[in-house]
Length: 301
Ligand code: CP
Ligand code: NVA
Image 1 (tube, protein in one colour):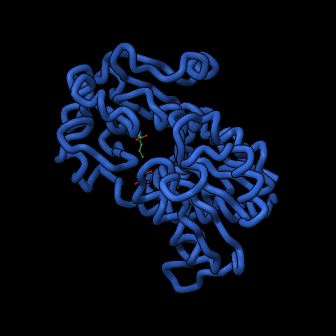
Image 2 (tube, rainbow, N blue to C red):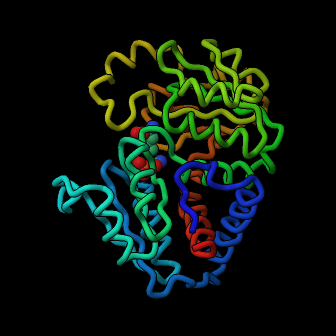
């Protein structure tokens, strides 16, 4: 049985196959030829943080494949009243076929997976958001082809998305440049382990020079709301906009996992610039990429 807690749970070949299948599933859906391999299958979805894209893409994806998804919030389950993770994992995984979790500490999802009888999917933790990377990679492949050998520039917080890009750099074999303010770096051990292809700078302009793919995310993630004002000051020179874009390759793409804060990490003009911004395709691809992920996990269960 396989879990998907970080991108590193896939080999490079498996990732390529999964992205190919996501593109195929998207085509079949558009042509009205979608198959329903998940009849009588159930996905449990535990959300300890808010979500629009993740919830709807998993729930719609499961419905399109003939299965069913159950939304579980800590507000009205025993998990929220302190039932141990080990117990919740053992009970839920006897009733459903796959479990998706969005939570805070990454260690919580690791513990859940340890006690689960069915595949567990990371739908975002404080440290990683690998499902978003499946969609981002699919989107790059659709618009520009293979990401291998490309230059990807991350401008902003060294957060869960940034750390997922570090894993992607290794699996997809691209160069990743991270421009972030002091004190907001990704995990030092993760950086060290990937220093052959991941570099860190304080200079967003230098990081964007000749880049193929620009990406950012909010300055304050879920759970950091009280730091918003302080972060707005510290990140003020780290906005992706047309000035930084002008240093990148002329056909550079812009991505953002969304939700976006226009005028903070990205200018409204860049987010809406259809020549470069692929954020709406990127959001849609959550649906197709996660369907391909669930198919992959079911095949290996
Ligand atoms: N990008 C993303 O995960 O969005 P949601 O928080 O809306 O699920
Ligand atoms: N870094 C953001 C991503 C949201 C999809 C957060 O964790 O809130």
